[in-house]
Each structure stands twice: as C-alpha cells, then as structure tokens.
Length: 124
Image (cartoon, rainbow, N blue to C red):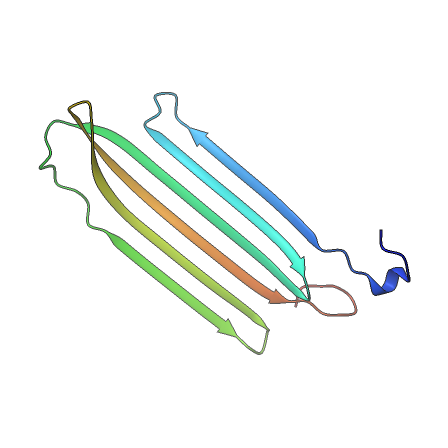
C-alpha cells in the first residue's frame, strides 16, 4: 500500500471471468470472457463471446451460410454512458487429411462505459 493519506489513493477494481466449454465430441466450442473495471472515474464492462460448430461434409462445394455483420454504437451524453456492440457470423471450409469440414462461427463483442460519480462511487 502506498504511504500517505488513504483518501488520496483509489484502488482500481478489475473482475475477470473466462469460460472455455467444449462438447464431448469436440464439434462445438464456446469461449467467453467478461471483464469489469472501475478506473479513473469510468466503469467499463467488456464481454467477448466466440462459438463455433465443426461438421464433416462430403465435398468441397457445400452451400455455406451467408456471412453476417451487425454493429451498434450508442452514446448518451446526458447519462454519461456509451455502448458498442458488434456481432460477426460466418463460415469457412477446412481440409484435414483429405476430409472436408465446415466451420460455422459467431463472435460478439460488447463494451459498455459509464461515468462514475465522484462522491459515492455509484454508477450513474
């Protein structure tokens, strides 16, 4: 702990959560993380999520799902908060030892920023 008046030092808080889930046959996988931080008057929540499904297919000319992109950005200056959200869906074809695999994936990223009141350290 730093020497001096404790009122002058504010500890930064950071919570991390990480999940890695895989199905028994290894065809489905979900990786997720969440990070919550209070630093320099800003409360931030960052969430990432990645999921994929792997299917073996007979031939290379399989019909793949169409790619998808969604982006949202909100800014509220009155309430002093921002939100950014991005979602990407897609697929790819992989070859391993002469076998074809279709990999379908989705990735999301969500970032929320809120200003913190100085006196009560409450989220506005």
